Amino acid sequence: MGRWLGCLLLAGLGGVAATAHAAGFELVALGVNGGLEDGNLSSYLIRADDAPRYLALDAGSVLPGIRAALRQGALAGGRGASGEAAVGEVFRQRIGAYFISHAHLDHVAGLLIAATDDTGRKPIYGLAGTLDALSRNYFNWSAWPNFADRGEAPALGRYALTAEAPGQPFAIAGTALEGTVYPLAHDRVTSSMLLLRDGADYFAYFGDTGPDAVQHSDRLAAIWQVLGPLVRRHALRGLLIETSYPNGLPDSRLYGHLTPAWLLRELKRLEAASGGVGSLRGLDVVIGHIKPSLEPGRDPRALIAEQLAAGNTPGVHFVLPRQGERLRLAAP
Ligand SMILES: [Zn+2]
Image (cartoon, rainbow, N blue to C red):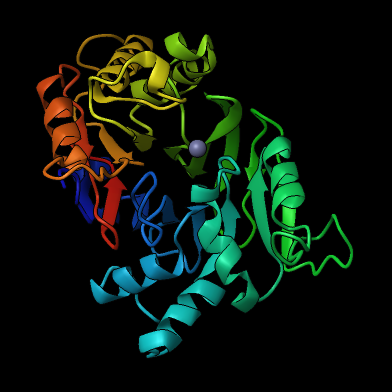
């Protein structure tokens, strides 16, 4: 990881050198695939450095991801807990809230399946349409018990479905983070991006999205106008975005997803909004939602890594995390 710097040496007033903790985010990958493998689907934990609680970004696979992260030392059980007690401690106590980018099953299955053993009243943030879909399609006593705080009675109230308006900053309960949701075009569904802020530092988490040109949309263009000024003042610590398929798929078969070629085209548009050539150099771009292949001998992950590297004229720092891996996103 190019930017794993714990502390920055800062020159104080009058030339006195002082050390200060470099602000940033910690991201733990609970699930990184975009389908097929039901124990490793899109989900990430994020927190401001050293904060006690995490926000979960999507929830395709939760408990298997926590187990993988504990095994790799990327999470600690707390109070000396180990084994399944540690898994339960992270799941119940250390995840303070969820953000759901859209209600597709591969982004919510882990939360639904483990909801029986969760505690408290945790907020689930998202766009109103996403939360309506969660309530209507899953928390309805037919597909699953109603663990939400509205809909088919009795509403058990374990989760507070908390709709946020696009472009309006809101405080994320139980954390010091502030979030702002922006809509994305994802085939027939409205997906969303969450822009997180901790003090002067920002991180952008993208749910599934297609390219503007294929979706006949200007939603990514609008987001690049929001992120560009943050890049320009060196406040964006990174972004996480999908690359579902290697190059070569016809646009008509993308179903609201990106390939390396399409992501690189979109990053050129972010570069243009950020001050032009060279402005994205070194920016951490975390790649998620890679769709595994059942074809023998085909490795989409290796192909995507290769194709992103080959076209990386903006000079960003692509990261393809494995399940259970921890990344630190901080100032260079
Ligand atoms: Zn999706």
